[in-house]
Length: 450
Ligand SMILES: [Zn+2]
Image (cartoon, rainbow, N blue to C red; front, side):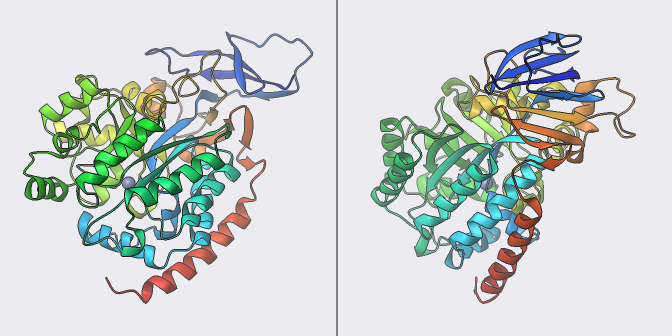
């Protein structure tokens, strides 16, 4: 028996609204086996105890959309809107190496863990060589996070370098190799998808991706309707009034699909998302940074669409901090609607936990604290000047808590960080290697013309 007990915490299980209580939790072999009110019973057989007075114990946060390696590109090209910015991001593929992907992705994982993220969906889209994807996966595994690796495809586009364009057949062979290699991975699952339809995908690719995803039981991750320019492209190139409507003819909206952004979608398209069970990853900080617009999150929630939260890559965020993202998600809807009560903190917290887990097909494993689920848990220190006194714990997690308040992070029952000390990662060495990778990448990028 490898038991862990966490005691004396304020438990926020995210199972039903307003449910929270002082109590304890017991984990056995990575599974939550007991949750109780009050003090933990002592049975003398426990291996590890974490006493957590002054802490919230809640499910680990789920980052439903990011590009981990982009921490190497923080605050680069930040004054550009989506299309000219993307031209540079894509252009980097001409000089990106597998070493950049490993060093950047591992630093992205360190930042994620330090800000309470236990699950990351890596939307992977630049693969000048197959090793770039493999090194990203290796970083996610080395970090110990629960991961979803969404290996997407591009087969066209004036701003897409030739080295990252693939035929569907070429890409599918590489994805099959990844699946074969990681078939028995405990903490890693896979998705595929068109990267940003229609600006870098042909209709043929969309048809083939749907067929391939169905044949391999893979979910689909795609950037959808991120800016006006994408909606305009679908209108000009395909005569369709909306990216979701365009994608519907290829069967892309579906229960196991996650559409990142969905900023410029009509009410009819929100209805398509709801009827098909498609989830949305809302990435408010990235949307604000690139000047994309405001996603109709309140309307989606009202119509019953499952909404998750994502940071997006650090090239457009510039962090991997979901606490920042939760606060931005809340405030952006309030100011957009000019209505302070338009979105509830609990709904924002749901998006960052069980909403994300559901979007990634992981809600039977994580996203809430329940007996039988895997132990993906975080402890947040709320005994601080900026979090006390506590009057509304849900609002205060969303609006007061900071990433630096996360004390302890547990994934699949394994303690990855305790009292802000990593248990298995050499974070200072990872930081030094990421700095070195950044210097090398920036030197190579300086010789590119865009
Ligand atoms: Zn993205």
